[in-house]
Length: 527
Image (tube, one colour):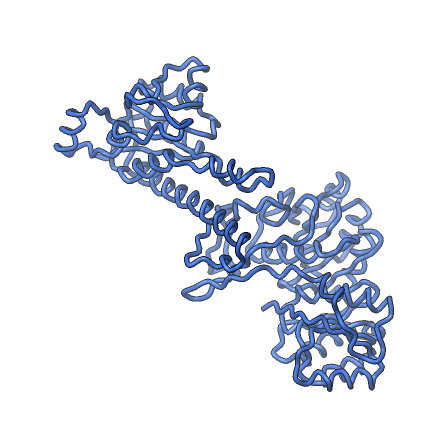
């Protein structure tokens, strides 16, 4: 039989969204309602007839409510197979009634754990025990029992009860799958909390023998990197800080897989800077980046870094986007796919969304105030496995500890540009070379198999602007040919990690050309 009638329901929820209206609908269909604690009080206060769980079990809630539903008269009524004669006999003998519908959502562990004000004891008290047990029991017995873990499913189930007195097998199976996914995600969040806590207490515990991850579906995407690939966007429920996952889409057409990759890179680069900053991303590499006294000036400098590549690019800002900057962004012959910023003035939103021909399609995302990069783990899928590392968030401390290796130290102006170039270089694909001048990216070489090729590409991009610029390299120079190529282009100072067996040759080459060079001792590969 595909339809299972529903005459008795157990409701026990933390999230009471839509609860009273749903319970009223059940009551109107003649469904008996059993409930617990705060859920029962909410329903009773709304004037609904509701039976307390203790009346069903014949046993009071104990241990401050920790034990109330863990009882044979609850789980027996859920797990018994309706058409199994022995199960029917046991329920009759023990005086256990069927429970046809289980409506449970869990203690808010995830939000409690994500709240920095929560104590460890408060977090532990928000680990639900009875709720997951009932959900799993009901989901296991989905042939006979309907389980709801999400208020969004209330109307679907209520609609079927009104039409036919119960639910379809296909509905019960879909809800069971959703229920098991919910308990898996819940347990994963608990495991992740304890893993982090153990790692905080003992760094050696950072890498558990089993890694449990939990991500929630944010949206399905039209396609992946290419049209023949299917794709979706999942987010971490614990990521509560301003970032792409929590950004609000204010305007524009649907975001693509590649848009999201570029937007993430843009926001993580622009948040490196305390001054007003703007970046232009193209194919997951910055083709423009700049800092200035105003956001408008920063955008002008960033866009002029490589106007050809900037066409159809992604913009990132670390300040609220104002009217003056919006007017510059929307000048004729400029086309932008997406913009991400902490916020937008009312006038800027109007300008960006209406004035250019592409205004109706441009995606505008708001993150809220951006802080510095947050420590976290970084995951990368490989065939049959997963690579995990802690996130590369350092940069300021690299320059503070850098050593001058040449006869001539960098000037104050060169040091400022070296610091800027070093931060940008960290976000360019390896082998990465960045040329900067006066707080502006003037040339970048990315993703080359040979580092000297990256130098030559960066110099070609910079053209005449390479004269008087500084150079940042994400890894050491294996040969002095990198220095010679840079010197020929007029570069005056360099920053690199050092560590090559031929460092002395590169240093000697710098001294020959009068170039200042500093070593950070830290590499920033980005593959």
